[in-house]
Structures are given as C-alpha cells and as structure tokens.
Image 1 (cartoon, one colour):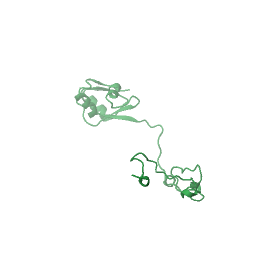
Image 2 (cartoon, one colour):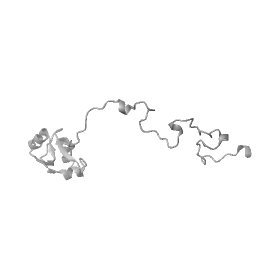
Image 3 (tube, one colour):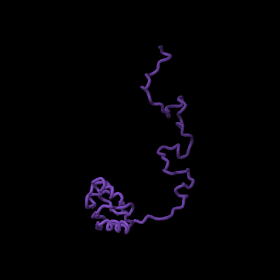
Length: 150
C-alpha cells in the first residue's frame, strides 16, 4: 500500500451524487447540468402529477361516463352455506344475530348485513339481520327457523 492506491474501506462510503454548482473547474458549474432556460432550469420547479409537457393529459383526454349514487346503501353479504358452516363447527346452536356475525368476522360493527341464498341450511336457526333475499328467507323458514329483520 502506498499513496497512489489508498482507498476507503469497502462499504464505508456511499455518496455517489454529482456535486453540481461547485465552480467551473468541476465541469458541473454554471448551469449546474440544468441546461439553459425553461421551467426545469429554474429553482422551485416541480412537475405536476400527470403533466405531459403541455400536451392534453391522458386523464383529460379519456371520456368520463356513469355516476356514483351517493345514496347507495352497501350491505355485507352472508350466505346460507356460511351459516351452516358456523353450525357445523359448533360456533352457533340456535340463534345468529349481528354480534355473532361480528365475532366470527363475517361483518364489521359498522356494516349492514344481508343474508343471501347460496347453499343450503339444514339447521333450525333464528337469524337476525338487516335484510334477507327472498330465497334465503324461504330456506331459513323451510328449515324450521325464523328470519328477523332489524
């Protein structure tokens, strides 16, 4: 080792940025690699999201359609086969209400629950929910249960 081949220990240095604006002798003085004139050469420049150099941006070129109904009521669906699975696993015996659904993570405490008619229900259950489909209500009552609307 001598003065001609000294170098820092491996991994000890990690700054490999261009040092711009440090005089003409560095080769990166003057305009500091920004070129002449234009928005990008000025201080404080930041490109707007979606900006395409003045060309009409894609977001504004594409036609919009449809609308979001602000009065729409969203329900969390729970199917009959899910209720039957709860019975099979011994988690419920005779009643299924909102707290049971929340405890079993089929809904959150702020959601409205709708019982849907997929699958079949063999157990006699008293089911309490915000809404029922016609097929789900019929299936619950056919199994000897009761459908109670909140």
